[in-house]
Length: 252
Image (cartoon, rainbow, N blue to C red; front, side, top):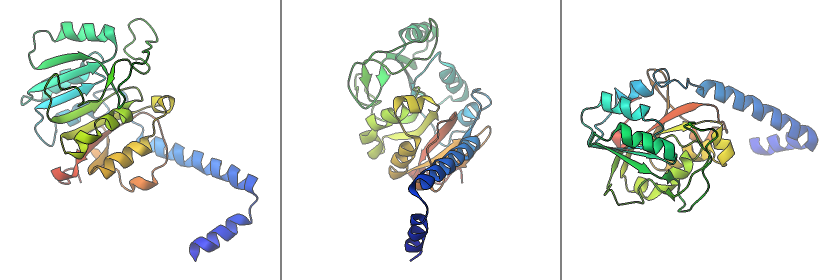
């Protein structure tokens, strides 16, 4: 009955005005959400360094996808002495050379020149400027667990920083996620998600349906994301940590 009355009231409003009101309230809603989720891009200020020092479980096998210059890997190596293997994956050939040189004497670190996606394909990779650590899309795509050349059976921590392709990487790992072969997942949301055509809402729903609890990463805490189905689209800089529900509600 309430829905019927609501629809009758809406029908009294001209369609053009309904559309204008809808766009206005959507813009307000998105702005409020982004301001709530917005975090610093500084590694030691946005909570990433804090979380690595307070992991809820031991992580022996780690994938750093979108490894860039290795700052996140450096922090992980510094913070955790139980690490067995960490795989650094990046599509930027210049960065791959830098990473191989940087970690050539560390037997725990493996550097892989690949992009991450759910499609197996070859697509051009554009680097804006010489020496720029970022790029758009990627070449030689593979899923995080499709290549068995390194005999990766399970992943304790999957970190994604793929300039808008994080969700597509999650789709590439969907079978492993369904089989509980992937533990903690971290991904970053930026305006690049809009350029790649990905939706944070879709990522949230996918992970929620895969039995993950989703948390906004803050400077020194995790904020649990609730009411997943009603979150509207956003793309301002923010980091999220996803922890399997089988771990228990550790950060409640």
